[in-house]
Image (cartoon, rainbow over all chains, first blue to last red; front, side, top):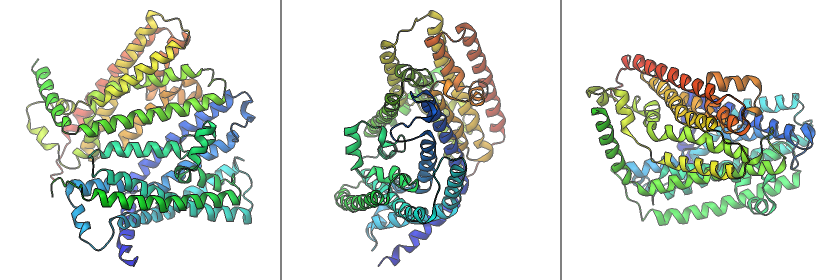
Length: 277
Length: 263
């Protein structure tokens, strides 16, 4: 049943390989962004009432820098799908029609492509980047000792929550992509999606900094599972019970959002105006 | 005179084609305001946890953020088409027609788009500056205001020059978008006071990619009287002149090496 999606899995993997130069440039941009954030956080801790040794909202400056580095690597590896743009292209060029008459699901095609891309990114960049980040942060004393049996359980849960994050990201991109059936504002929709995710997932700032009410609300939304939670699992800031709760919440959200995406698509497809053909 | 007329004719045409996509503009504008709202909320949440950032209060940091939007907005209004040159137009062979017309190619690229979204940034930047100044007690001097105006206008010239030069490299390499992006993104460093950076980065932001020169130093001059405003005005204008001349030179040199990709 799933076999027919294998070519898309492959295509996603190969596509990602082909754009190695772009990915390197993107890595460069990311490095400068991280540097800026690191300077900002160092200044924040230097200026805090307790000085460099202060703990702000449960983070020491060492943990905060580890958090910034790891969420960045995590985002780089996990959020690399072009689902929204591809849907938009399919609409503009009229190729969406081709998929509607084929015996595969439009949604399944994108999910498979994203997973293929995730696979390539994880193997090609994830393994070296995570290893480098973890070893460096550990050597600088920014991370606690990664004692092995315990860390291994966290690592497994981290990988599962990373997979969940990628699926969540893809289904959200798909939902925003399907909105392109109603408006042609792909660029605006994409930046809206990126902003919502980076703010509510804790990438911009750990959710612990949010005011209590907002924090409680956001912790029940799917976004924290897309960046903050996986990284805090990896950093062993969450115990196993908390980690499992995070994975369960993400899984539940994947189901809900997939159902919503299905309903939305079946409505949108009746609205489709193909530009050109 | 002929060019002024030509520019407005082209811009009118570009605006008409924009009106076809009204919904896009509304969505883009909304997402723009929302994204800045989130960044400001993040800054606000951080400053709730500490007394001040490297000696700058919440409103002072807000002032930096607001002022940094002005040169970026002015550049955004006039030179958005260079992004397309860097990312797509050369690679897709879409520039050939510009070379056939009896008007300089660079002029045509400028005249291709006028990006009204820049007004969004301009309005938000000015609004932020107004709100923050209302909550600050600074001695406003004529020199400080002058240096802020010079920073905004000539800063835009510097940003545009960087954009032109980087986009021109696409004539040789076919695609220079990512490189342009790397350079352009340094502008976000200037959203915060220079005091938060180590000396090396500070020097880089003043002497190499001078976002700090025309954003941070003028704001410091207003808030703390840190620099001589007239000297700073001179430095910014001089820097803009050098960057602009370099950009024109790079563009002309690269243009001559243009080969159509033919497809």
